Image (tube, rainbow, N blue to C red; front, side, top):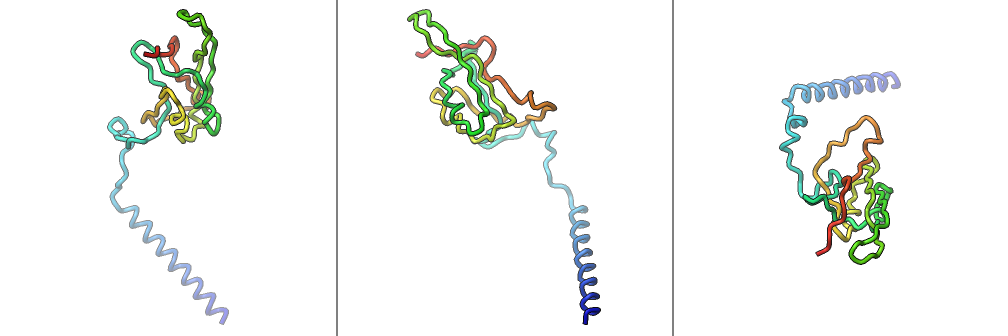
Length: 156
């Protein structure tokens, strides 16, 4: 009885092995249906709500809408955003106000949840469809979103 069960298990194992090899051969001989990614990256169309990379849009006069309030950094679940501000005196009124010094974004630890964009009261940050973030060192994933010499947009 044990010998019969032993032979049956060996035959069943060989059957399953041949079945798996048959499926593998079918898939190997089928024509490829994957897209040629590197060739179509410039023409790739993303859906409307795609989150690729966080940016801070600037106007032609190098002005941004960020008031350095820090709400986006507070909403970020894993401290991806760091907002550094400085005190600047306003020429017109003579009062001190907060101005954006550096807006750092660590794309390496971003979960692309979008809470920062939703929380921003000034709509100062937005998502772009740029999705290629491959670098050799992790330090290159930290980006400064505000441009050098940029200033806050004047309220109208």
